[in-house]
Structure formats: structure tokens, C-alpha cells
Image (cartoon, rainbow, N blue to C red; front, side, top):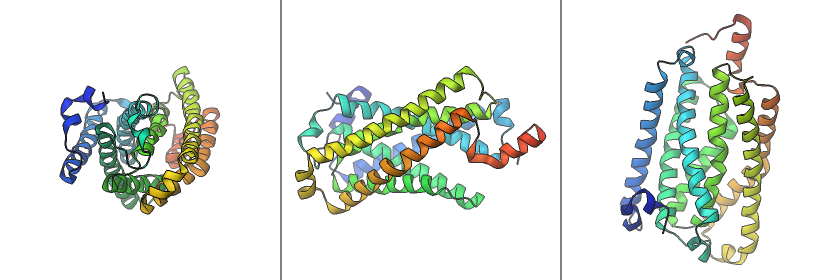
Length: 277
């Protein structure tokens, strides 16, 4: 039984070979994450911490909630792919399942939402985070290509587990904004967060190991666009992004600083409050 059958039986019987079916689920995924963003804004509005945030920080707060929801979703599907699913192992290049199709379509919907928000924010606030943009745009392109060529679901579904750090990272930031950086909850969350990045490295190098075990099949059958996108992203994540983020979060565990809004930190330290836009 696939994981999607626990969500709704219709997902297991959908005709995933049809492009319009995939586009419908991508659209529903995008709408769902937009709804989560709206719900976060509505629920958070009465909070004193949220009221004291600048407009830019409120946007980041709501994005953090959306990312946390997506991170939990990815953790469930990633664990399923690694420890339960056996069908995709039959062919690491072209094997697919209803669960893998649903996971891929949902992921594309999320990254369309995420990249749209990042693009709008970067243009409106005249800022640019290279690693964040590189990671998310490459993910959107790679997962979209993966759906179109119907390849590499084996790695795509297992790779979702890399988002296991996201809920803890988002909680870390919201606790910082709530002035709870010196509480036991924040320290415990930060400790778990750092170790999720260690586990990310384990998963990333497991992917290199799976690549080694299935190299002949991958080299002979994997479509070149998918090969180039996947291994470019895997190289960047395994050797640049995850090590860098592990270092930054380890430092942050010792020195609780919000690097996303350093101007806000300086203003707060000077005046004892956060200036609202």
C-alpha cells in the first residue's frame, strides 16, 4: 500500500501519466501553501510579537510557517521513501509510484509559491540571498524536469528528507523574534536543528553511495537534462550549502543572532525595540 492511500484512495487511482492531472495537483499544492500563508497571517495578527515586527519581518514570519508545514510533509514522505517503499528500487531511473508522483507534484507547487515570494521580496526590498535563490530555483527546475521526463523519482522522493531541518529552523527564527533565545525551548530546538543538518549530510552522502551502486543504470539510462540538474544540485548541497548552514546554525546556537535582519538587531540593541515599517 502506498502512502497516498492513507491520504485519499483517489490519489492511488489517478492517471498520473496525464500531464493535466499533474498540473491540477501542482495547482492545488500552490493554492494550499497560499492558504497556509494567509492563515498564518490571520492567526498571528493578534500576537504582540507579530504586531511589533516590521512588514518585511511579518512576511518572513508567515513564510517560515509555510516552510515548516512543507518541512513536516517532506519529512514524512522522505522517511517513507527511505525506510518503507521498495517499488522505486526496482529501477532507480524510471520507476514511479502514485506516492512519488503526488510527492513530486506537491513539491513543484511549493517551490512555485516559494520562488514567487522570494522573487517578489528581492525586487521589492532590493535584496538578494545567493544560496537561498540558487537552492530554491534549482529545486524548482529539477523537480519540474523530473515530472516532465518521468525520471529519477527514486532520488527525488528520498531527497525530500533533506527538509527535515526546516521546521526547526523556522521555530528557531520565530523564537528569536519572540525574545526567547535564552530559554530552554530555544536551546533544545537549536540543538536538534544542528543535528538535523548533520543528518542531512548523512542522507546526501547516502545518495552518492546509491549512485555508486546503480552507476551503470544511471549513466546508461538517465536523461542528460535530469542527470545534469540532479548531480549539480547534489554537489552544491552536499559540499557547499549543508556544510555552510551547519556552521552558521552551530554558531547561532552559541550566539543567538538573526542574520536575516541584522539591521533590525542593531536597531533593537540601540533603542530596545523593533522599529515598525
